[in-house]
Image (cartoon, rainbow, N blue to C red):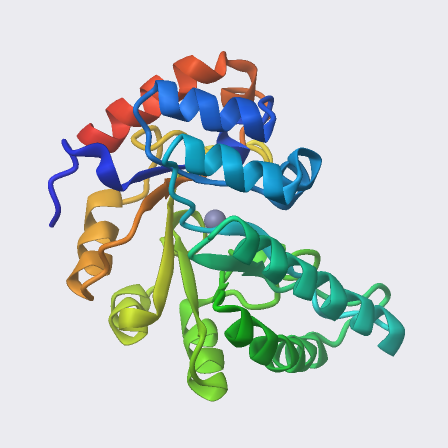
Length: 275
Ligand code: ZN
């Protein structure tokens, strides 16, 4: 395993410092000695892609991923076409800031639908339609399987096995984002991480709190919950993964209420001591 006393592999997902604009996040991370940042599209668009690219460059800040594309399933064909268009824009934005990949939260059930198999078909079709455009743009797509509690409204790809199957089916230019929050419980995790191998494009950390008070916005700081972070990192690094360890904490009642500089300092400390 890599020695994480060296922070060159630490990246901050901007959701962790939610109150900051992209400008503030880039400058704040730079001040904290953090060299990589993974923005969300809303704050990237608010900043402007060209301006963001200049700021990132000026601070020598790397971009492991852009969050997020996806949300493919929809009831009507016109809505699915609109989703595809939006995903192409996301690919352009990722290319514009030199992001190593575009993370995809693939979408759940179309409104009013109970057909999860059908939704999964639509996801596959959406990925297949987007992939040639992404390949042309030099942007890799990273399917992020989400914990099954989000299957209805966020992502009907819920295990690494499912994501690996899609990748095997779709060919080059597509891989997976492994987020410990979504996959820690999976009895097949070791096997599927090994199977993903070089397709692991993005690695996200936080922790699972007991009890979890909110299904979306109560993620824990690394070390405060029950995820075997070192164990999962060992599996991921055993595949040869040498990318960033991206801290992504949605936490409306705890971390989003703290001063972002303090949150970054704690992220750095936990990255060294427990990740
Ligand atoms: Zn994630």
